[in-house]
Each structure stands twice: as structure tokens, then as C-alpha cells.
Length: 389
Image 1 (tube, rainbow, N blue to C red):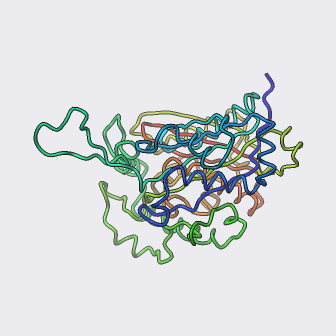
Image 2 (image 1 turned 30 degrees about the vertical axis):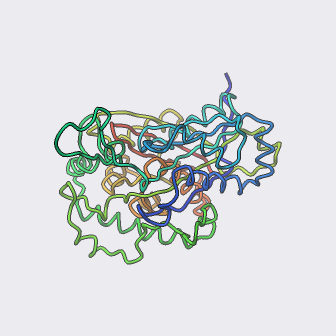
């Protein structure tokens, strides 16, 4: 079977809000609907509706902390966005690599001709993540324990029973990544993120919601001195300053084939080259993106010198540092608009946000190709390569 070329033709994102911040009143369905509507708006709603009337269309969303979201969040988003009720939709959960997995499925669906148009990305409302109580059989005696679903389903490895921060601290020691190096990368992440929001081309892909016009976790008053004064949390070198912040947000992209592009005179933003997926020991999860990236490069005959923009999910600054060190790539062209340490990490969404960042970066810096990668608890890594158009 000849695979069709797959293109990204639009993208939209909410800004990323602090936990309990400006997006706190919005449920996951609301956030995803805002992002999807933005992507549709940038195509033209009338044109988009004509496209999906005549061509097979599906929605695929990454989402991690699903308790309390209701049945099939992706279908809820369809209704919220007033899209045809006959449209299939489903949710993917592979922890932090979920949105990249959603994009991979979108790619496969279009490349094989199963669908013609796919909206794919992710969403997370960490503010609305519930606390869990196991009361099905009653509480016969003693204290009632509440589990935070952010930890249970998002930040604690169910295999090792260790928090992501604890595992990452071990990796930092293994690769000789110092506290000072982590703080410097965190500092740069904020400076780059601050700069990104001064670019109107970058900000044009984001929804302005009730005067919230940029990511809430970005610190204008960031300094190395302030970072150095923070105490480590559940680790020896990782602090609230050099780890990603809990956040609310959604990022979604629209993908299609060449036939649809020509028929409706769409302007493609990027071509999808392909994906790489790797798994290893859960205790190695922070560095598995280096494995998935090497797999990607080998599979598609790419060399590192061809890649002009790199995006590595900053679950922690140490994750960024370790993968840069292992892959031996240029930090100056990695996370050029900052990363999750600055703008926050709504865990089911961030991977898609990195793709948006990379597309804008390729156009701003006149770069031809980008690679986006993320790690995931339980030992996963996912990478995606795209080409600027």
C-alpha cells in the first residue's frame, strides 16, 4: 500500500493556566473545545464544515487524569464545538506522550486512507482533577484516606511506586547534571517563553480567554538567585523552580492529505515525516526520548545535522539536560520558545503544544525540519519529525 503524505493545516491552543488560576472554572471539555475552535477558526469555519461534510473526519485527544471527566471526553468536545454528531472520537492515555500518540494515530489514519481529516492533540484540567476515596465497600473503622488523582494517575509510577521527581533525580545524578545546570535551563526557559509572547505570529495561534493573554506560570521576575534559594522537593537537586508546574490547557492540530488541501485551497504549515516510539525500564523514563529519537532518525534516514529545531518536553529541567547530553544536540535551537518549566505542563496536552511551538520556530528561524520528543511514566518515549512548508 502506498502511504499518503500527511500535512498539518491548522493548530490552536489555549494559553496554559496555573492550577487554580484563570482557567480553573473550565472543565477539560471546555478547554479542548476552545483549542479546537481556534484551529477551525484559522482555517475558516464555513470551509471546515464543508470539508468534514464531504470527507471522513475523526477527533483523537490525549488525556491522562480521566476520573470525573465523564464518558469519552473527545465525543463531549464534538458536541461542545457543534460538530456533526456522526463524527467518531476517542481518548488516548499514555501519560505525557498521549498527545503525540494521538498525532501518530492521526498520521496513520490519513496515510492509509482510513480518514481524510483528523483533529488531534490533548487536554488536561489539573485544577479539576479529583481526590479519590475507596468507599465502595464502606469505611468500617479508622481514618479515611484521600488520594490525589494528579499523583495516582499522573505523577506516580504505578510500577515502581516512585514519583516522577524521585526517578528524575536519580537520572540527574547518573548523568552528572548539577543543580546549577538545572536552574540555568529553568531560567532560560522563562526568558525564552517571555520573549515568545512578544511575537504576534506566535500568539496568533492561542485563544485569549477573559483577558488571559499568555501562559500564567511564566515568571517575569525570574532570577538565578531566586531559583538557587528554593529548597529541593523529594530529591536532592529538583525544586519547584526547575520542574514543570501543574497547569490547565489544551492544544490541538488539524491534519489532512494533499487531496483535501488542493480541493479547498488550504495552506499547509508542515508535513509529517514520521514517528518513533520506545519503551524501557520505568526507572529510565526521563531518557527514553533519546531512544525514540534515535529510532525515528534511523527509520526515516535522517541525521541530526538536518534538524533545525528540537523540542524536548521539560517535565523537569533535568530531563531536558539529560536528553541534550545523550543526543549531543544544540541547546541554542532546543525549546527556543521556552518549555514546560516556564509555561506549565498540563500532562495530556503539552506534547501537542510542543508541535505548535516547533512549527512557529521553524518559520521564524527559517529552519527546514524539527523533532519533538517527550517522556512518560512507566518508561515511555515518543518522538515526531516534521518538515517546514
